[in-house]
Image 1 (cartoon, rainbow, N blue to C red):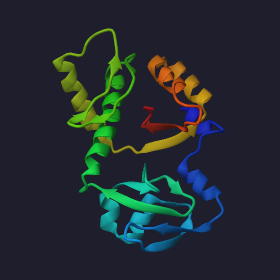
Image 2: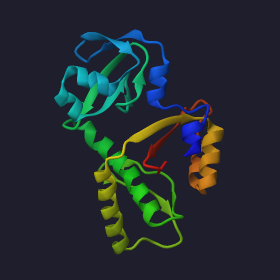
Image 3: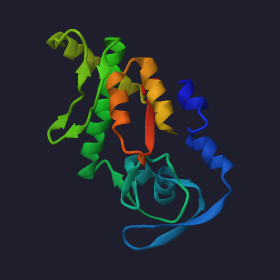
Length: 201
């Protein structure tokens, strides 16, 4: 995890928020009303300022049309909306996160398995894996059981921004050749973000 924690190009939300000079930012809500916050401010802090029930139900925040996780700091004036568990959009978010949880479970149970992509789809989610042996029905039961344990542990997803070279070196060290290919195929302008969930990146 040295790449994520010590990289000069990486950051974590807590450190970044405390290092920034506090400035007032205006957050505009879907109904057109706005409120001033001492920034940077996170989606969770905005939700908590509205109500405890909203903070409990909140899944992600949409900032100027882009979905952000609730712990990512907003540093300038923005139009926002908060997606809660009760909204239709929440299902796709849950499925996307479940795909990553499945990948974590697979790599914990079957070391050496490589991952490629794992998106949400219309009827669920999937992840492509590469290993010498095919998965069996018994393996699938083990994977599901491990996924339940990971979810129950309730570890947060930690976002980091890294350079392309750092990302490539990180996944090369892990032997994740497919991830390296995906990174190299990204446009030069692409911001590369990594998410760490309890040691699985």
